[in-house]
Image 1 (cartoon, one colour):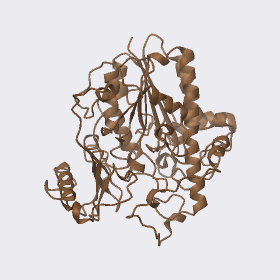
Image 2 (cartoon, helix red, strand yellow):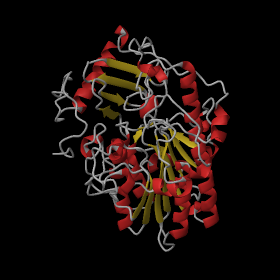
Image 3 (cartoon, helix red, strand yellow):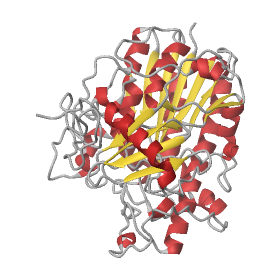
Length: 487
């Protein structure tokens, strides 16, 4: 029988928040063990770092140019012909998702046999004045009715008073730990192990809504971090340190000078949420051992995007910097089914679009022609003749902060399409992106070469960002290309 496949996806977790990477405070012992049982990819990125486009890349294996989501836009239908769950289901897998999907319609199965859904707080299905009954959270969400059966009918996702995008505020979880959304995903996933068809291999996607805000870890996990001396967030020579408009006082700000203690508590809570997820994964791995499936299951762990968490006085996601665009990526093979170089690291640039072909490759299944990513198995095995991408193009429409970027894993070039501002970073010598090399005369030729590469990459795009040789500043950005945009 083919191997089981477990895809673990968290939301808004930075690529550097693993203790196996010698993070100064974060503890992730179960993920560290995954790394020992597999391969850690150091240069893993999400090309379009926000929830919806990132998840489109995961499920379709396409680049953003092809899946059409180049920014964040809700309520755009998911009508892709070939998606990972459907391919695995057609090949005889029992497929299940527990947790966040963030697709449309909200209950779209996307090829899964079943989805037990909790997308967290989504504005489009919470705004009672602007949606239908069928698409409201009361009709779609599976976690909230479960919680209300236990905590009372008045329980809601907003009880702590924390906005779903507040990266600067924190409070401890106020109910029993067993009722936290993180525990719920694991509880429901354990139930799937009980209910699955034992004659079939399974594909389970465990999709957590944390460490995305609200930053609400159980008290015991917050206690691990609340009194620690946390490292100061890096601040580049290009960062806005003045915040004349006092944006940092807004709980859902994307930039600004947040009061020091408020920010320290938020960062502690963010780290605590990651350790909480890690502990619950340990609970699930123990259950896999009890069910006898650990050694015939391939495990892939990743996140849809990161969190700036105060780096350079920036917060949230959608930005091209490492805190936002670099994600954790672990491919583990506890039963030695794939011949991986266990305990090794890979520094080639990979992207979320590589997940679909990788997992199909793990199952020895054909990869559809629609897929533009590549299987990372050859890299994970240490094959010496692997032909891999030279660079990655990322982007995100975000009003005046709309951006495009290129990286080869050593350098990163950033272009802000509305202002023309450019940045160039040496990721090898300056992994925290502290020094912008774009304004230095000795880098003028290199900067020009990167600019030309981006102009070539954007040639033919419907927005008109490039004529093929030159970048065009000030072109109106869109969140979805016409291939998927609403009429």
